[in-house]
Image (tube, rainbow, N blue to C red):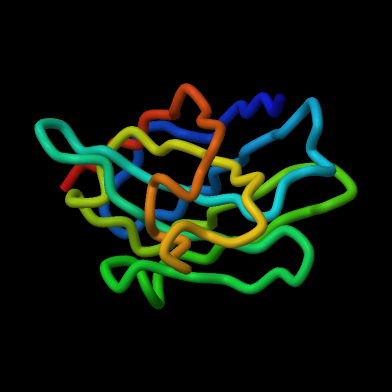
Length: 128
């Protein structure tokens, strides 16, 4: 089992930056990839970014490409999401997810079914 805890959310102004962290514990050596998803109020949960645990390959959603960066620290079993130039439409609950699968479902890291464990989420609010 893997337990995930997000932190770093808060209220910022448009144009500001924020860094989210996800701390993993438990059988972290079994993780193959981690990802960030978000759910805005009244919307479906959507993919934001993902990173493979061994190779560090990254995948970023088009909606945040150029503004958000994902990284990991294997030694700390942690993953980060650096969010720059935040916009009001980035406001959402951000979730951390971990996959134990050898390959992503459908070969896509943006697929939620790829992930086996989820954190409780951290709220990001952006004022205009």
